Image (cartoon, rainbow, N blue to C red):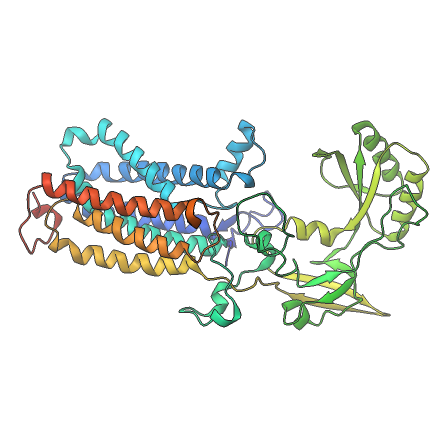
Length: 469
């Protein structure tokens, strides 16, 4: 997984901290456009009568409407991932295709709508046959999906099921099914506790977020006789056997002093009414705290403030306890904050720890459990299907048959590939994509029967598209 391929040099001053990132997912989408619209498309479409100057126009229309349809279907299928249902919230989520991803069948729907509009506005006057257009387009779609799935793999989305130890002897190396855990989209399904209300299989609890667990923190609320903890920063409780954390030399009872080269600050969370939190926040700032981000309101109005030292933190808690504003207090640290909202593209976790009277530095990359790399399986399948479509072209018996072959082969591949993916199931234990796959296969059969009845039979051994007049 390589969510960020590299950062553009000399841009860190206006895009801190590392500069403008070039995302692997976006790079693969751009490569798809180059291959289909600039290299291969201009060689196929003019052969069926599409003017050369219109090839890139239609490529742009199909590309944009396909991406839009793919994103809309994803947001509908995984609506639970988009809690902000306001128009602005949905609009922001729509353009953030790297957060979650897209659905291929949605791109097909969007592409069809784009073609219909473009045909009626532009292509109809050139008397372009839709069946011949489909034959020219089919291999381009296949190679586009092959390259696009590499983007999914780099992004860490569209993963397969967890591969049990007995079935990790796979066509591809098991290491190809492991992703950097903290930035992987799969993290929510293997780390967070079960109990969510979505329809995805509950496989949570397979691993920790970093490869180790922490000692429980003592509460700092106003009620009860407990004093605030002397130092609420993270202390290692236990390590997962065989994890990258265990191999790095991290040990139980290690106190986390620094995270990725920055101090592991103590973070105090204030929750309550807006006025109460605002008043207590000012008191906490007077004890040396630095507010983190903007206050927000979910279940209660909440603000966070960080402290450089345990002494500042204890002084702030004592001050806040003496002025009851109806605000509850809880504490964690920078490590907790960072693990909750990990920066895209970062893989390594660097920790400076205190071990007795000594300090030690450990650096490691937390990895997910092994998943089936279904993204790469689809890349291989679509490359093979691309070759099949090109080789089949001389043997087609009527226009449109190359596209029919793509519908049948991709529908079958996708139905089987979905069986080893983690997706919501609908009727009879099948996922939405499996139901669509069955629909695509059925549609392919019906289209073939229709074309046989309406299209003239072509001579055997037909080679280039332009000879199929």
